[in-house]
Length: 106
Image (tube, rainbow, N blue to C red; front, side, top):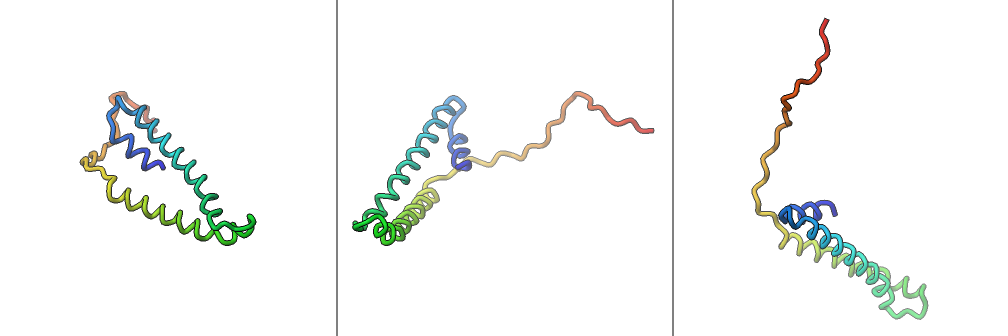
C-alpha cells in the first residue's frame, strides 16, 4: 500500500495533495469492502444445502477466482501505471554553517 500511496502523491502537485490522498484512501477502503463482500458470495455460489457443504465445496473455487483477480490487478498495474519522470538526483547530506561542538583533544 505504501508504494502505491507514494506513487499517487508523487504524481500530483502540492496544491492537490489533500485531494489525491483522500481519493487514494477512499478507493483502497471501497476495494477492501468489495472484496470482503465478494468472498462469502463466491463461497455460497455453490448452492450447498448447508454452510458446511458451501464451505467445503465453495472455498477452493472462491480462492481461485480471487487469485485470478489479484493477477489481473497486477497485470493492469504493470501495463498502465508508470512514472516517466527522471529520477531525482541523489542528495548529499546537508552541511550547516553553524559550528558543531567537537571533543577537546588533550
